[in-house]
Amino acid sequence: MTVFATMRRAAILGGVALAAIGLSSAAFAQKTKLTVYTAIENEQLEPFKKAFEADNPTIEIAWVRDSTGVVTAKLIAEKDNPRADAVWGLAASSLGLMASMGMIEPYTPANASQLKPIFRSGKSPETWVGMDAFLAVVCFNTAEADKNKKPKPTSWADLTKPEYKDSIVMPNPASSGTGYLTIAGWLTIMGEEAGWKFMDALHQNVSQYLHSGSAPCVQAAKGERLIGIGFDMRGATEKTKGAPIDLIVPKEGLGWEMEATAIIKGTKNLEAAKKLADWASSLKANELYGKYYAIVANPTVKSMPPNYPADGEKMMAKVDVDWMAKNRDRILAEWSKRYDSKSAPKAK
Image (cartoon, rainbow, N blue to C red; front, side):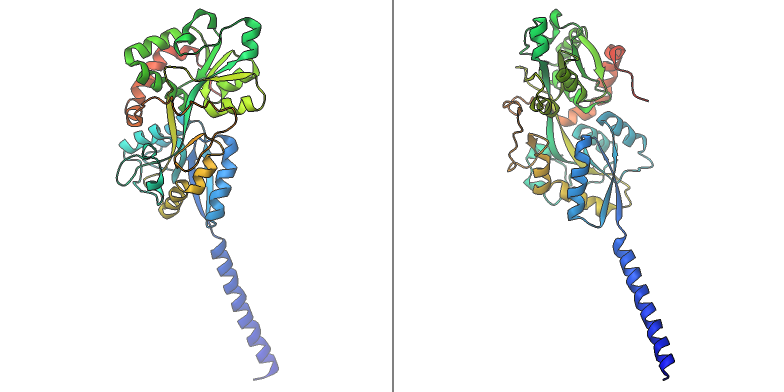
């Protein structure tokens, strides 16, 4: 073989080898894009994505994020042509409703047995697995109260007193998961007849129903309103930042919900979605949830953020998440008929 032929052969073999390496690299670089619908807070999106992808480098999360009511409506609208692969961080009552409509792919994640029983759907296989619980509390601006000589409420019933007229904001339950858990809690604690009577009286004092679970406590923290009924952790965060608010746990008890994870039936990325469900119920994930929530699914994770009400978990009402799911449409229709006139305009 001539020197030229040898060099030519080496060049061809080298080219083949480089091409093979290139193909291998391309295959290695190819990630599964997992479309994940969520209602978690905006500041949690990047930490959640980063933590999951670090342990699952072949999967890339593409978030679709909005408030609970909007995400739930979007998923149901897409029922016959689903665009989501999984849900990571949506109200369990929403997922319970979707499960009853045949929209959930049943799957029991690897770590489900380690979680508190209340944080599991109870089905076999599971339809959803819980992550963390959030509560409705009263954020009360003490500076505004002192200035205007307003008493501090200790109960839900107190909020119907005439001295609080036009002083209260709360989430719209049709667009906010915190809003829905709030009214479902009242109906559970008081019974339906007394619950609606209470909301009729409260409505007289409500200035506006907002389309966010966090906004009421933020407005109270800024002194824009005296009272915000809203998301517990947002209230604690605002107080920690120095806002002059007290977080009040009304003596009748608290409505609550949990965020949960589920796989959407019809996903073309089922194995990747299962890996997400496995990771979302892991101890590592629960430790991450504990950075944002006081109450998480894994009983070994103890989290007590600064300024969080010490008796929050103790005062959780005996709420039935399946009842919340089954009665959601009926309750929201009745609520909208009675009170929607004071809802804030929706952003376009």
